[in-house]
Amino acid sequence: MSARDNILRRLRAAPQGQTPLPPDVGAFHAALAAAAPVGTRASRIELFCEKMTFWHGEVVRVTPNNWPQKLRELCAARGIRSLLYGAQGEHARALEAAGIDGLKPYDRPVDEWKKELFEDTDAGLTSTRGGIAETGTLIIWPDAAEPRLLSLVPPIHFALLDGDRLYDTLFQAISEQQWSDGMPTNALLVSGPSKTADIQVTLAYGAHGPKELIVLLLVNEEEQA
Image (cartoon, rainbow, N blue to C red; front, top):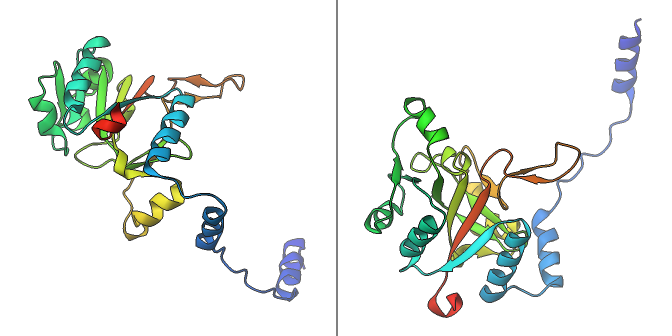
């Protein structure tokens, strides 16, 4: 009998233990929530802004009515010559009506304009599915209307976040948005601009993606002030 056969024989002869029970994730997070006060809309907004700033992201409070104009001002102030956006995205019409210079629709397969996309695009705008106040994180689900490269390639990433879609924790977002009913091919959690610590364990920003992340946070007029 070989050593391998001997090991397998002993494994098969070993007494069978009980099948471990899966962890009760819901109960765990319920206990955490019970031990901490439930966040209010105002507290979620403040915490999200604080955490996003910590991760070197910028949050600009805007309203549903003025965000296209504010985006135009931000692009002009930064000298942005081209702004990539999803031609079929939910905010396309508002962008096109705002008179922003250099609007560039993402309306072709990447192979047809790779050089222009990677070398001649200053910024990109995406929508978001929500945000997580606890960690200062955006939830982004790319699709055919707003492909992944829209938030990955341009040096500056503008992200539009609805203040009504801010959650205290990731678990709350997963539960209330019912992620179990259907996930996209690529779900993203974004906290600040791209970063890496591969070189001498030193955290560097803007290494493998956008060098700047600017969140346009949709709030009401009182919250903007």
